[in-house]
Length: 476
Ligand SMILES: NC(=O)c1ccc[n+]([C@@H]2O[C@H](COP(=O)([O-])OP(=O)(O)OC[C@H]3O[C@@H](n4cnc5c(N)ncnc54)[C@H](O)[C@@H]3O)[C@@H](O)[C@H]2O)c1
Image (tube, rainbow, N blue to C red):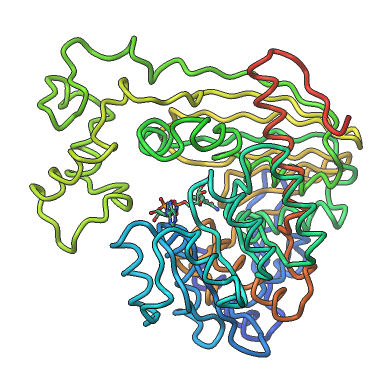
């Protein structure tokens, strides 16, 4: 079968099963060294995965107050636009006027429900909350305060990761959640991506036998690194959180979710070696926009990234159809024009950690931040099988027979999931969270605050190990 026909038949199979209600995807089944099996073999593929519909089933429309109307906050509001009648933004706070107006205007939020600092929105909730739900999509250092106060005020809260900046804060939040009984979700969006859900399902169904070890690497694309972890919001572990948390708490969360046991101890290594002043070329000014003589040859030229390629321009709040001159002017006044070798960054570019779990599973986790591509590579080995994948598709190989099955769902083929961030996870998270709130049932959400605390504790322990050179025990 040629590729196009194969795609079409898979798409129509997927569509028909989706619309049948209990949607599922079966991918190719084969035996090592033989050709892929015919379509009829698809039903025998044990990786068949029930695809949940994207639209929430709710008893009523839920109202949402958003604190932080930037990239993530604005992204999540799109769910309510895509599925009218599920959620409605009724109050917004952002210190950035452009972003406040963008979100508030999109939802016709009345003037008295538009706030600048998030504390103003919370203060206005003192005599009664303004909405059913609070979305906390603020910078990392404000998550703790906004979530704690939100719970006290009676909001169910969806908080971005990282949930807080220290283990103590995470545990305080858990205690507050238990005290108030609020439904609190953490935005570990990858748990909701069909790719990772399928891996988790295969583990839980015993398809690879008893779990023995995991090797997982996050490759962070190098321009992404320069944008976020050298020049941008997450450049400094003290302002945001250490990169093993700010970037990789998703990875640690997936690992922890797959294993389903507590982590007993960790050790980690990692270093900032490249984006440091020593590597600043002679004569390079503090900003690429100040006529750098190395601009043409520099991979990290801000002019190439933001002006010529128009990449990563979200934080620049560009006007529609901005000219190169306008972009350059805005860029020059922003942190993103800074020479990558002259920033206040401290995040390591390489990180390697060894984790040991109480059920005996061992994990080799690493990230590499100078990669040409952004990718998550995972190998999960059990007593009966091995799963291996690069973030889009994965293969499960049976150790006894060598037979293998591929899971290779195309997100764009699934109604409601098309073009969704994090492999479909962004909107699925919102959908599950809304349903959990509507039904008052936190089990409808996998990334509850309680479930997410553990991965944050692992991340903070890794960082302590990296900084002290010691193996760190968790849970006493
Ligand atoms: N789940 C994920 O995969 C994922 C991906 C990216 C970012 N994040 C996290 O989401 C959070 C937000 O990230 P983002 O990319 O949307 O950042 P962003 O900078 O685009 O958005 C944050 C917004 O908060 C506003 N803000 C700052 N201080 C404020 C205050 N005192 N009161 C009101 N508003 C204030 C900013 O003006 C900005 O608009 C971060 O914690 C980040 O780590 C999560």
